[in-house]
Length: 329
Ligand SMILES: Nc1ncnc2c1ncn2[C@@H]1O[C@H](COP(=O)(O)OP(=O)(O)OP(=O)(O)O)[C@@H](O)[C@H]1O
Ligand SMILES: [Mg+2]
Image 1 (cartoon, rainbow, N blue to C red):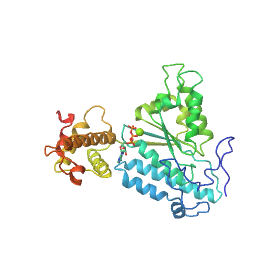
Image 2 (cartoon, rainbow, N blue to C red):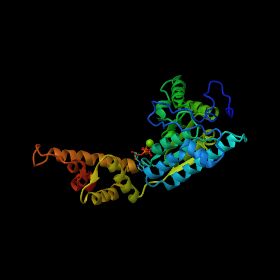
Image 3 (cartoon, rainbow, N blue to C red):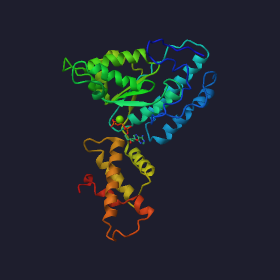
Image 4 (cartoon, rainbow, N blue to C red):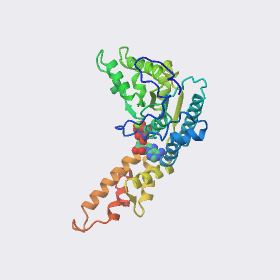
């Protein structure tokens, strides 16, 4: 059995050497524990089988619409991890992979969703003990007063240990215009953990691409510790329509006659408006359409004694879509 790569006092040890530690039972994102330890695996197929990482990769492919370049990068990272595991099993020199990442893209492009899948992959391959995701923003890390930031950041790090720490809009940590901003203190503590505890914690910094680029330029220490940059493209209209159908199906709803075309038209208009947030806007639009469907059924002219069929209850009608403000109603 391989020995832990780093000997850091106080840090959980041996995540990479003991890949079959079961998932944290209370974590909603933690997957089932791998079937068997991959300690002695000698082939790619063995590692894949034992870690069941193929299942997560296959689910990523089928569950998420589009995102072709992101999915490819994740496959590349998974391949790197599998080969590293085989090297470790043969006692080859292991440098300790740097797995910290940045996820850049506009709102609603799937960054948080993919980060959860990434946590599962890292767990299944034994790179983190639990595979949970802790998602935070500046306010969770930075205090308002002197002395408040370090305990806050350390508490978050403690929660995230054994999994993935996802820092959304990470650039808000850095406010050069304010000399006494406590964000810098949080960055320094994060940097330390990213370096010293990287065998049991993966940090993903997320946000808009241009702001993230500037942030990395101003924080070379952080930039040099982030090995993988994944860029999330905006979805095409076609992809957004497919996402809508998937979301509706998942909620046991469907489009009635003409409603799909109405929704396509809705998307074409909405995408051109301010604050469009990709798949998130699709989800919000569908939620509002469901509200309208409910109000429509509630105010049914046939009266409240009418028995509502499965079809009545699960169909979004054209009018539920077209009543949106986006159509100028
Ligand atoms: N490719 C996709 N296929 C299906 N559903 C998706 C896809 N991408 C995102 N979604 C859904 O859209 C919603 C928003 O996604 P998510 O929260 O992952 O985006 P985000 O990039 O983190 O957004 P934000 O920047 O606003 O936090 C979620 O409900 C998610 O399930
Ligand atoms: Mg998000």
